[in-house]
Length: 256
View 1: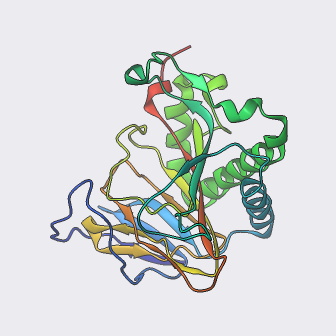
View 2: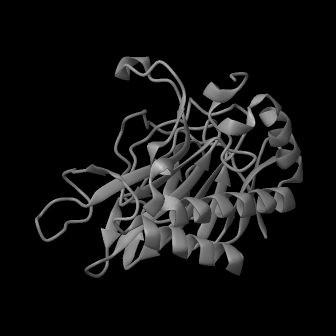
């Protein structure tokens, strides 16, 4: 596995800016180092068991079995009605949102749908397998995250090292930083791609664009830097990019 030392570069990117298309410059299995510390890794292809789980989760998400939040935007993949086909589904814990008249933490309503249980089980098993990869490639980070989760109650956990999961179908995120995450913890991004290019993670602080191909996995501390997703470009009709993400929210540290 290649060692990639992440070195700061000058840039003018601001939070909220749209991420333009950039050709990936990280396209092979890599471990990322910053200031001499291993902070993340990228595998172009996951172990076969994880690929099968990701295939199942992706297949279920794209059916009516899983309730989703749909979006329509002015760019992206266009369906026959000339609308952008974009949606997401959240699993696990949802933090309090007083501005939405919900001042309490909750579990995603997707869990209450019987038809979504295959999707949920596949995602949960995928999260647990991802944790084992973190233990293998980033043992110090794994132990650190175990300690960070000592104050997260079992009922708020999705697997052992995350609180929540989101699946983003054809969503190209503008530049942002995951300020709601537990500082010191890592996210997992698993990519499913079909007849498409782009949809790669760009980290302007390091001039790094990680080529997230089908069945790849990226482990990275999303709280650390501003990052965005490059546009998702179809190569053939019916193409798409779906990201299966596991993340640790600090809102659940120390609450019952």
